[in-house]
Image (tube, rainbow, N blue to C red; front, side, top):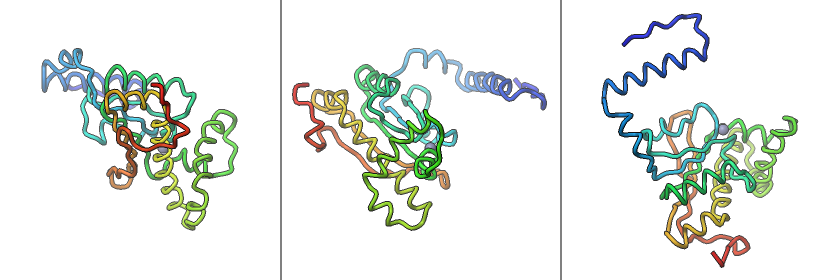
Length: 219
Ligand SMILES: [Zn+2]
């Protein structure tokens, strides 16, 4: 069915019209499509990505509904007291039993760039971006040696992904699953807005070495 679009239509109304078109198209191609999806929610992957609208997890990985569990925030951070992220992580690891957790950043990330500046973004954003500044401080020598600003930004994007993967490994949620079920594998990836390709930059397999300070031995 062709839905006539009015040029003066509100932007949000266009979303609803497009949704209707999409649903009809899917049923047209496969009459059982939605009925089948109702009964499957067994993704193998948890994706923790940036909220940036240009990095849609399913599109860039060619995954279908039901295949990837997604959490997104500014600059794909794993913050210790983020109840939202940890609820998603707990559910994905302990209920959905995902085999892989992927942290995916992207080159040219605005959140990372903002954290590298000295600009005041007001209280809440400053608080969030502080976590990225802490990553910079850890790698200050390596980063300060890169004279080109864009290259320095992209190196921090990679290092940030690595740090966030290590943050996951520091949690009892991950360590318990590693110990009892030898999963999930942790992956740090970076997506390029320029060519649409993902570069793996870091990974940790179940039981990988972490600083002993963070190991729970009574899981
Ligand atoms: Zn971003």
